[in-house]
Image (cartoon, rainbow, N blue to C red; front, side, top):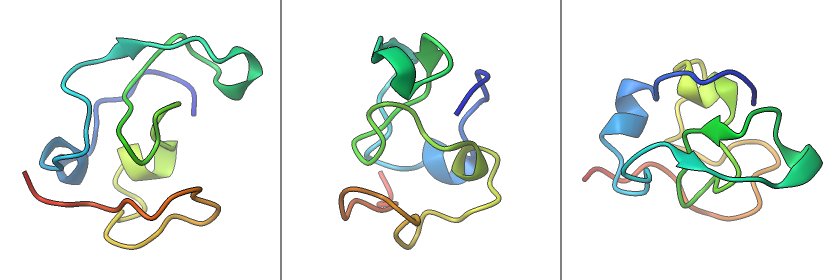
Length: 72
């Protein structure tokens, strides 16, 4: 997680995506103060999901919950 990247089309159509960019400060857990986040990744959506490399229709490796894409 790093630079501010627009969410993938899949993320944009997911009911779990937070409505807008939010400011979160979790110390060393993130590289940027501004990021796209969702219920599955409240500290920031991983870049390979944001860039549509990994389709979050299945659990992301190392994910700490069982939330996946769900259409709005």
